[in-house]
Amino acid sequence: MNKIALFTDGLWPHIMGGMQKHSYCMAKYFAQREIFVDVYHAIPFGKEPPADYSEFGDEELKYLNFIPVHFPRNHRFPGHYVWESYLYSKRLCRQFMQQLSKADFVYIQGFSGWYFLKNNRNKIPNGINFHGVEMFQPAPDFKEKLRHLVLKPFVKTNLKRADVIFSLGGKLSQIQAKIVPDAEIVEIPIGITAGWTAQSVGCAGNRIRFVFVGRYERRKGIEELNIALENLLKANAPFEFHFIGPIPAGKRIEAPEMVYHGAVYGEQKIKQILVEADVLVCPSWSEGMPTVILEAMASGCAVIASDVGAVSMQVDEKNGVLIEAGNVNALTDALNRMINIYRNILQKMKINSVKRVQQKFLWDRVIEQTVEFLEKSIGTE
Image 1 (cartoon, rainbow, N blue to C red):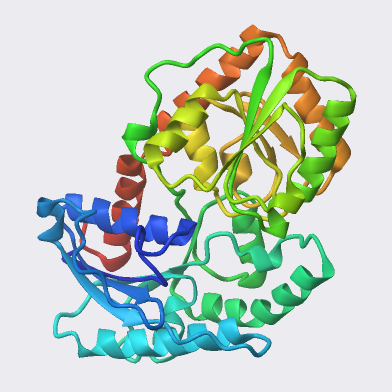
Image 2: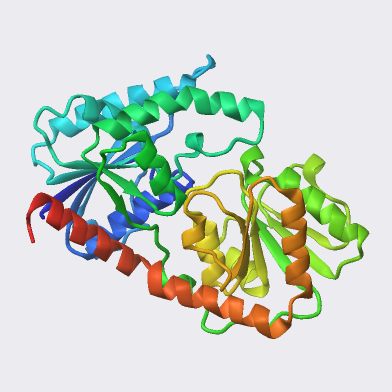
């Protein structure tokens, strides 16, 4: 295998997001394996392409060719994101066809390969990764259900046209198998860099320290989490709760136990907060395989999380508690359980989190699985 074309709607740190971070890591670790990668990535409308790609090392850059493609300007009509994604995929495909060197495999993130899949006359081997396929997961309200209805048929079309569907595992594989029953589904998780793994795991004190990481978004379950926290405060439970992310003032609880850090952009600062925490709480209505759960696990946190997407691949009774999405009583019970759990049992959960990351979710292992599949797929073993 000589070259991969990576299609994505953004590249971290130029555009923030889980898919964008995944694209960055894939490019980085393919390059470390001395595999050439043409990286087709989105540039926001009206913005200039990056002046450099210094987030990659000099040796990695020898194997990376970056092709920035402008994303269309934002429209205001219903369903505009679908239309803009299609236009972006068309621009990207035209750039791809202008390249002189042929890719052995096209790896597609989300909608970025839409036009290519529709017009792949040369039958170039390809695979698509829609990560969380959230539009096929539970929705917290009517507005979100409508958004799901708009997206579903277009996601289904792209999945059907791809040669291979890359799944992060868990319930995501089941969802995609129902959408495309005859599809080849390949389960490969996301990864995390070894630098995140804690050298030692701190012991919990008398007051359990919980942490939530993320922006305010209805599907993240902050409304349900706030109700559960109010229940704990009324019961005078001994705990602290730390929020990392831009939580609106109207969604904050005024209490000494509540700590709002706001948006934290420095990775080292986030690591520090996670290392000092005991339990990450992720009560989302829908997810793929959240990087934040891996980061918290690597930092030595037990986890309370909704059993959605591929979360069950990350969390079980050995390192945390899985709950039903949107179930406030289950969330309250899980928080209480962690507050009252024997500290030696909690310590074992925290240690198990680190071990699981080391065994299954380091990027060296993830890229090895990916390369092994690609070589088998295109017959270059």
